[in-house]
Image 1 (cartoon, rainbow, N blue to C red):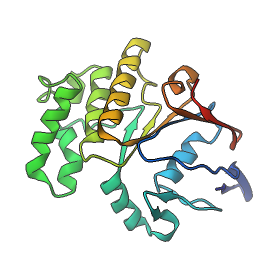
Image 2: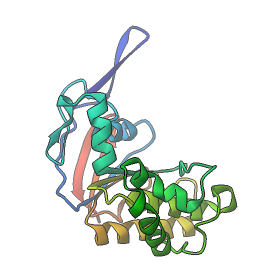
Image 3: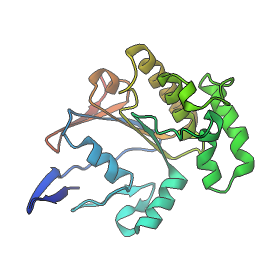
Length: 219
């Protein structure tokens, strides 16, 4: 697929003929420096945007054939996200943040039980009543991991998930992410500029200047 934006009356191509398939349950890293097109590609894969050329098929759904509302419903049902900046709701406790995806799907009865189960799984079983401001950065990211897995997504996107963490805390978060991925069978796509982090994946796509320059098994 190719993505082009118009800026100042000129077309700017930020992705050029990027094409790949990812098997269910896989762990893929998209690696590249700032400006290489990683974030644009993630937005297309998640149905947040549409490519100028080509198409994205996610779990059998051709996203190009879905309107914005239908793509939002698809994300709610099948996709989870973990971001660099945690994106927790500051007025909700850790438990309430984890419950949000299930409550939005109309599953309030299962929400608290699932939240407590996942918070315990990421080592925060005794911190569910704390607000984000009362948690360290690493703890907030672990809450974000629990939230991302709460509705058992088929596909999870992790966008620079350790970018705001020190090396030791970041390594622990990636360990948890990989363990949860294996346990749940979720397909994991990790977007990063960190080659060491990318090696945790089973497969690495390398982007440069909007083009796919390599596609290989992780070293």
